[in-house]
Structures are given as C-alpha cells and as structure tokens.
Length: 330
Ligand SMILES: [Zn+2]
Image (tube, rainbow, N blue to C red):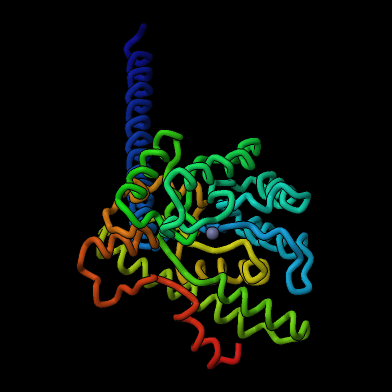
C-alpha cells in the first residue's frame, strides 16, 4: 500500500471515529434532556392530587322516569369517554334477577370491576349483627359475583362500619385475610346518595323540574369533600395518595358523572383507574379505632389525634346536607 492510500484510509477512519463520538454525545445529551423532561413531568404529576371512582350497592330498576338501561348506560358512557375503569362494590341481594344480571354483566363486559359489599348490606356496628353472620354475608355475595370475569377480591363494609367490638373487628380482618380479600377502603367519603334521593323525589313529583341546581350541588359537594380529605391526607402522609371516591350506582351519577370527572380534570386532578388506585400502599394501613370504620382518611386522622377539632362522627351524612339543600330549594 502506498503512503497516500494509507493516509486516505487513516483519515477516513479518524473521520468515522469522530462522527461516531459526536453522534454518541448527541444521543447522550438527548437522553439526558429527555430524562430531565420526564423527571420534571413526574414531579409535576406528583404534585397533583389523584382520584378514582367507585360505585357502591348497585340499583337495578328504572328511576324517576329514567329507564335502567338509560341511566346505567350513561354511567358506562361517562367512564368510557374519560377512559376510566371503575369498581362496583356490589350488594348482591337484588342481582339474581334479570335486571341484576344485566347491570353486573354490562358493567363487567365494559371492562369495569366487581367487588364484594355483602349480600344484604348489614351494619356491622349493630349489636344484633354477629361476626359469623357477617362472614356468611361475604360468602353469599361471593356466590353472586364469582363467575364474572372481572370479579376481584376487594371487600367494602356497608356504611363503612368495620365492627363495634375488638372481637368483631379483629375476627373479620382475619377472615378477610384467610379468604384472600383486601380491604376496599374509601378515602374520600361523601353523601351523593342523599343528593340522589332528593333529586329522585323532585323528578317523581315533577318530571319537568329543573335539575341544574342538583348538578351544581353534586359537583361542588363531591369536589369539596375530595379537597377536605386530600388536605388531611397530605398532612398525614406527606404526599397525594391515590384516592378512592365513594359514589353510589344511582341516577345522580347517571346524569352528572361526566360533568364531575370533567370538573376534577379541569381543577388539575389526575383521574385514575380504581383497581390501580388500590395498589397504593396506603390501602394496607390498619387503624385501631373502635368502633372501627368511616373512611380510611377519617380513621387515620382520628388515630393521629391531630384533627379532633375538625373531625365529626359520623364523618358524613344527610344531617350535614339537609339544611343547605333546603335553603337552595333542592
Ligand atoms: Zn353500600
């Protein structure tokens, strides 16, 4: 090989090396920039409160002039529009009928989840309800749900009442564990069911009644409750947890759920799938208040002893909403 040819090849080789180094450096800078953006995005996300939607009980009839397929279908369409998956905590007593099976199968087939809420919805804090009876309630509800593909072993206590004696509380917690269940706790408690009952009463009396005021009250009430419980949770946990909002499967959700989800998004909240929210380790928290129950946030706040001035018992209820709704003519 003559010297010129060798120099040419050598220069080409050097050129290739230089180019490779430059490309590699550019790649590294780009990856690092992307990482910075991702980390910043994550930080912004971590600063945002987070909410998921759960629906208790499960109604199976036409309501105040709305056919079951209509109001139930509206709930499914609202969830679909926002690409959200929800959980229904099912009280199975009314689900063995054609309508009951319709509600469960359409819910299941839309990709939402079904979880246990006892068969007959007893109050576990009632002296008359024994541990053995309550255990049978879970097993009987499981019979109704177990053949649906999206049945998951989460359990929610009716009225959020977890037992009025240490024997009942601890006995049922052990029972849940033995049967592979996790506690489907609520972290944002509210009184949507009461707004629903007044809305249905109004529409039954007058099918043409204006319902805009109910929509406003529903959204404001639920949003205020979310802010209240998230602010307590932030103090207790030092972060925004993945909240599970307690709603019910009812007419008011059918009419206004889309607006409610839109409202949370507009206020900068992250809306998340309910079954994923329950992966948050906060749901492994065991509190030791007796009587046990209410929302997990309430119970943790009570146990901390730091919020006694603002905690009330029961945490939520119609008694807190009645006068306000009366004054608004709702
Ligand atoms: Zn319930």
